[in-house]
Image: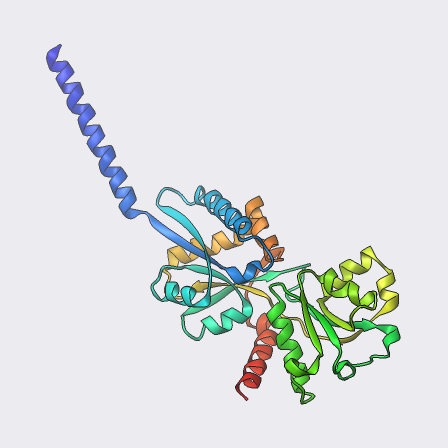
Length: 299
């Protein structure tokens, strides 16, 4: 009986040693998938809400990866930290504003893979709006007038568009308008124009269409005097040095953003509905705008 107990004890010890060894090996063999989001995507959003949504999505997706992989998520405060993480291979996938992508791609090896879409469209156009009864027919007529611009993740592209458009007329954004007022929401940009409290505003076309549905009277009182090309706002990029296996897992993670509540919440926070596989033609007009703007800045 004593011998049997001893044999059983030895077997239990061996099983325990094998289990510990396997656990240690699993830890050693575990690969982390590092996914980042630029804080600039979450304009006018409580960063705590964005952090919670990202962590929830990361936890949900980790469960589908298997025991050999973990998915880590992080919000980056600035482009310098993103560039450093990419160069040190501490970042596999990063979600950026398109204008930040142009900056970062000059200093780090990144590969565009997805773009954000809204209202089923690849990009958004901006509308410059005034009241019909003001007698304003073109941008030139807004010299020394006041304008509202919404401060969201599209804000810097709005300013680039106005700057490049005015430059064609040998004017500068900083001196053309008597006042440039920034507001948080499209409605706060547009309604003061409707109520004759300010001269003009810029909003995205989808925002304007939504407000028209709520208040058809806007269409009778307001007129579009300038419309921009469609510009891309957000873009997902891979670190070019990532290995093929991690690359596939990372791309799968991005594609499945829309398949979970937390993933859809993340997209809605930066005003997007889904992701579309990147094509170079999608970002052509945005890149042309960015390059024109940079040339103006150098003058």
